[in-house]
Image (cartoon, rainbow, N blue to C red):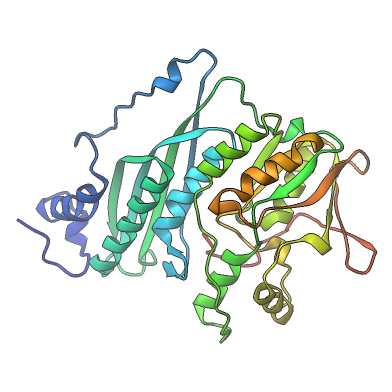
Length: 340
């Protein structure tokens, strides 16, 4: 039998031949797991090194719209999970992927999402090794929700933690900020905005390996997703019991993103990113870390945006273009729902 339906029906979640056809033709034919069992069986030579540790993370994705300029829900699902592992110093190796599909969803959409996931997994050097599929009735989901989990190996000697940040350390980002949040907002079409924006969605595993090789003293790293760079900086400052000061004059922002934020009353520091990382390094390693970032396609726009300060524990401030200073608080709610 083969999959002839153009849209998903409840039968595709019923456990019979229709479900088997959907799974085999749309999912496993692309992901190509080594075995068709109820679990993946994993082996990594890296775990045999004394002091090596496993890293494990999980995330769910409900982005609206499912497809947007620069990616789709599958792109975000792989990149987001890979990045959560990479910023902790892990080398991502394996992913799982679970799909909740709304009845009536186009099979062609599923195929595009799965192709995006496989392409991103190959680029990141990871394998999608196990998963699950459920179908729910119309109106019980919004086309497609994806949950991924990831496993990686942290090599001996790596220990990235925000609590290790020290006064005088330099804060780096790998490129322009807010592109993902702005691109999603424009793609929704609610505001009749004509900005030609593309999401920054990308995997950061190779970039982090380059940074850690060049700057082994790197203290901590976080990917700036929901809540943007401002939320990440506040989390780091609170964990370290120190202050962080950033400089508005050097923040990397596109003119289109600045303009959109001014029109809508948004703060670009809180816009979501899906391919941006905040890295804190000792001052002595800041230049080599920046050079390592800029040598990678994921980090060509890398800049130093601030410094860790000894006073005002847990506070983030920004030197403004007018020579003053303002407090950059933690985001209370969410500027944009369904962003990832």
